[in-house]
Amino acid sequence: MIQLENIALSYSTAHTSVDVLKDLNLSVSSGERVAIIGPSGSGKTSLLLVLTGLEQADSGTVTIDGKSLAGLNADERADLRREQVGIVFQSFHLIPSLTAEENVALPLDIAGEKGGRERAARMLERVGLGQRGAHYPSQLSGGEQQRVAIARALVHEPKLLVADEPTGNLDEHTGEAIMQLLFDLENDTDTTLLLVTHDTELAKRCDRTLRLHERSLHEVTA
Ligand SMILES: Nc1ncnc2c1ncn2[C@@H]1O[C@H](COP(=O)(O)OP(=O)(O)O)[C@@H](O)[C@H]1O
Ligand SMILES: [Mg+2]
Image (cartoon, rainbow, N blue to C red; front, side, top):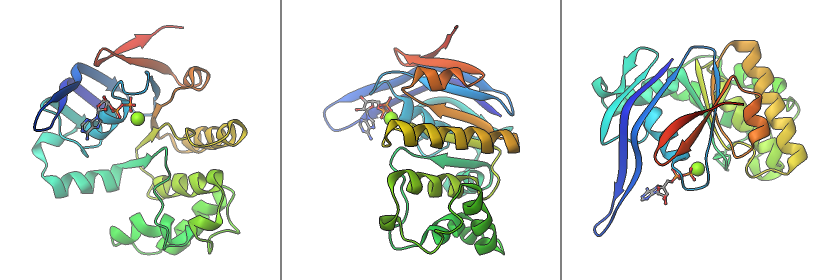
């Protein structure tokens, strides 16, 4: 499902250049759950951006579901993301002027798919927010907003779900409920899951854990 080969990424500004990823390889099979751990600043978010085509690596190849990102232009990469990938961020990134249901329906609306509202309503039901579709993000708690974000990430039934510290802004109890929900939904659908987390206990619930250390990934054995 994911194949990264010899990825290098550095961020350059006028005066400095920061090497973030180097000689990084990753291979994830369809349906697998993989956790990525590593300290703050080690490049976890950068890695997710590279593999979803939101950031372009300096060198190396990214292949998602058999498609090399290098062969795609920006529009085609956006199409691939929209069709195959769901992304959940630490800070929920909901659109404040849209209701919960409109936020969830947005990816379907953008893709020109019909029945977005009904599918969004059903997805909100599945994340336990069936009664809150007409509410705006500001009217929802952090945990509820993250549920909406999860519903949005999954509404188009992506093959790959990428989650970047999805419980990072939540208290422990709410975070646990959100993770349980993510795992349950992922189980139901056979989605491949790439989970970035600080939490080694959470990581243990995945099939494999990889540590981002000194710019590349290393298998963690229990
Ligand atoms: N857009 C950017 N421009 C310059 N440096 C960046 C940018 N984004 C991230 N960095 C730097 O790259 C490194 C890795 O960041 P990040 O991928 O966000 O790490 P993590 O998600 O593991 O905390 C950090 O040193 C960070 O300051
Ligand atoms: Mg990060």
